[in-house]
Image (cartoon, rainbow, N blue to C red; front, side, top):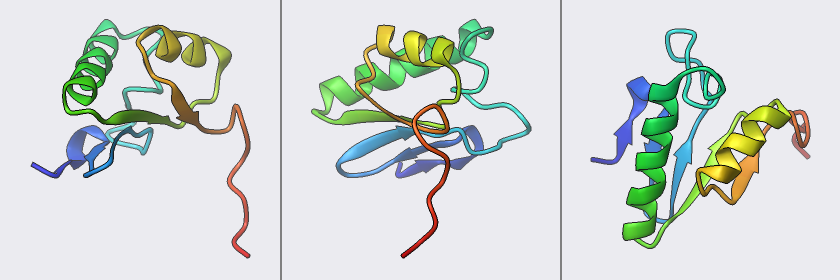
Length: 90
């Protein structure tokens, strides 16, 4: 299983990305403040990453509340508008 595209999760050899790509207007990171199911799924992804010796990267972090929740769930690597808007190539 290399991808769960319908849920915005991409599993790769060296990392697991919890992506905020639009998926039916809902994503794990986007709704993590209000949706317990999203927190449970992210917690599970973190555990899978730990067991497999992988890091988890949360993408699409836009609000400090999301950052706090994701950090509390054990995610060390995050990216999104909270840190920087997308940069232009070259």
